[in-house]
Each structure stands twice: as structure tokens, then as C-alpha cells.
Length: 278
Ligand SMILES: Cc1ncc(COP(=O)(O)O)c(C=O)c1O
Image 1 (cartoon, protein in one colour):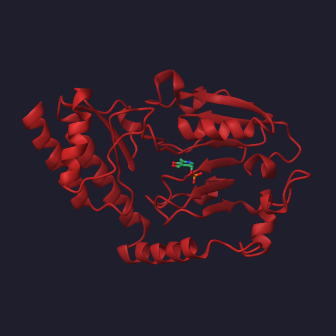
Image 2 (cartoon, protein in one colour):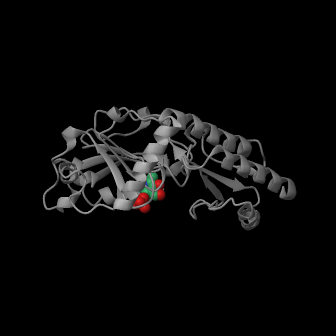
Image 3 (tube, helix red, strand yellow):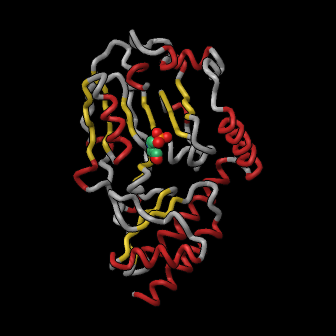
């Protein structure tokens, strides 16, 4: 829907390729326009992000799309690209992990199933001046204006995920809001990365400043132990730790719903496992 709504008669757009999800966004955009891949982290296996000054921006691009947190490799921007073009961000796996300056963005979109609630809805935040220029011959539903003019109820929305999202927002306020969540999340991530870095048995290849707060992939020095690690972790109720098949190893996704206690339990298990098998 981003190219359909944001090209506004132009024929090109800029896309940063920093992982699996930006690659998928690129494949979609290529159906509608010339995609200029302005930076490409596949060269470093998604472990690093180039400084913005080294990106190759097509000045004729209608917008610049990037993925602030790449969920699979655990690669997260620590800066916001500074561009005159409308900035579009797939925030699916980072939204609500901390405060964001919405004014920097043309479009923010995020699937619900990480920090918002349960799968079944997507939140889109669009700058008002970008609405109302949808390409011709597109489904009415794909026009952001349709959603805005109908309070997101042009069709019957998925009511239960919407209800759950509301409850999550209330819960977030009770916690003290996103500035408080940020502190909790930063501490959670730091605890886990410190355990990984403090051992020769576990490793994470991502350049330190670009390490994700939400998704922490890590490898065991001996990959033959992956199965045993997962089995014994499950015995301590530490589940869904298997890494994405494209990366292998483990991945701890530590969204807002995961408390510090869960991290401490995981770190305790990792240390015990290393003692027995390292
Ligand atoms: C950053 C990011 N973008 C997009 C998606 C795709 O979400 P969906 O499966 O709801 O389309 C995911 C899912 O994990 C994601 O992490």
C-alpha cells in the first residue's frame, strides 16, 4: 500500500535493504516503481548498517523506506535517516518499545503481533498531506483516505485484535508509558548481550550499536548442541528460542510482554548449559 499511496505520479522510490523484511518490502515496491536500493547490508550478512551519509539516494524518489528493526537478524537502527523525502518505516518489531518522534516520519506501519497485541490488524500512521493521492485502478480499501474517512471501519475490522490492542495500550500507560518501557527494554537487552559477550560459548555477530532491543539472536560455538539446548531450555519453560532458519542458532524475542525475570532465567540457564557442555 505504501507505493500505491505515496508515489503520487513519480516513478521511483528509495529502499534501504537491511534484512529479510526490507527485502520483502522491496519485492512489493518493484511491482509499482523503480526501486533504488540506497544501502545494502546483505554485503555484511545483516550485521551492520552504513552511515546515512554513505547511502546513495535517488533524489527523484517519491519516498524513502526503511525497517528500523530487522526482526530476524536482530539489526536495529540507532539513528533516523535525515531526508527531505517522506520517510516510511516498517516498525512492526520495534513500535512501543520506546518513544518515537512521529514528526520525523511520512508513514509508520506496524503489524500488531509483537508489541501491540495479537495478529489481525496493522497500525498505520500517515502524515496528513500525504493522504489522498492514491494511484488509479486500485482497490478502494488500499487508499489510506478510505481508512481515515471511515474511522478504520470501511469494512468490518477484526474486532478482537482491536480490543486486545486497546487493553495493551491501557497496560502500557499503567506501566508509566513508553519512556518507562524503554528503560526496562534497554536493561533486558543489555543483560542478555552481556551474557553472550561474556562467554566464548555464545556469540552475536551484530555490530554493538546496531543490536536490537527486541530480538536477540545468538549462536552456540558448537552447533551440534542446538537440539540439546532447546530441549533443556524447554524443561525450564524457556520456549520459542529456535532461531530463524535463515540464521540458525537461537533467537530470544524479548518484546514488551517479556519481563526482566524471563531474561534472568534465560541467562541462568545459558550459564548452566555452558558449564555442562562448554
Ligand atoms: C519487521 C517486520 N515486518 C513485517 C513483518 C510481517 O508481518 P506479517 O506476517 O503480519 O505480514 C514482520 C513479521 O515478523 C516483521 O518482523
